Length: 226
Image 1: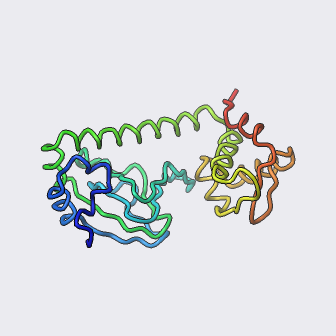
Image 2: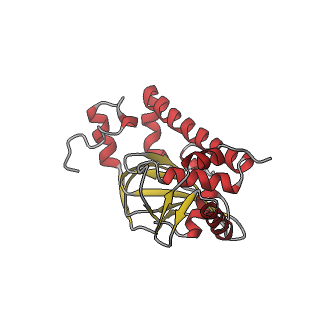
Image 3: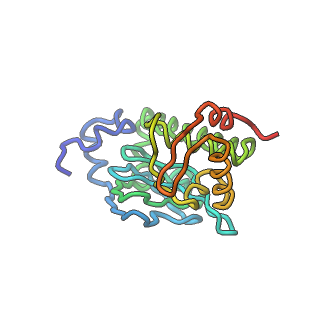
């Protein structure tokens, strides 16, 4: 690494001294994953903490029937971990997939443990990040339990258009990928997309979509199952 303090820009390690961060950097395992490659599979024991130097990682849960649910997406500059990093022999509850070409820096439980035990601020910062992920998981469960497929799809479309309030938005995801993000099937997603179009909420083609009635979509996204 050319930077004299390569981990200095990572908030998790801000409490460490520059020499300690350099020690961690020297012990990091660098891994490259092309887009579409699995970083780790569900049910594997994977005792690592990692920082995404570049790319995007998706956590995917698969059902016995072959359906997928995207649990979260972690982008460049973020930190994530396997549960076995904290509790030995706990398997991965979901697979981690490189959504884009990725470069990760990994640290094993064994390597990081002395730093965590020595520096309470580092452990506290990591605990806050873990709690953030717990709250995110709780939000996902709440949506699956109390929100209809139509509501989850409406919320997903709104999220996709956050950076573009007007004009068409490119359809970068397949129906299967959209279904994985809202916890449904491609058939249901297709059905509700056409229903939204028929009801004047969206305008959709094979390559893009536009939000026509954002207030009604927001109302639908905020509704709960009866």
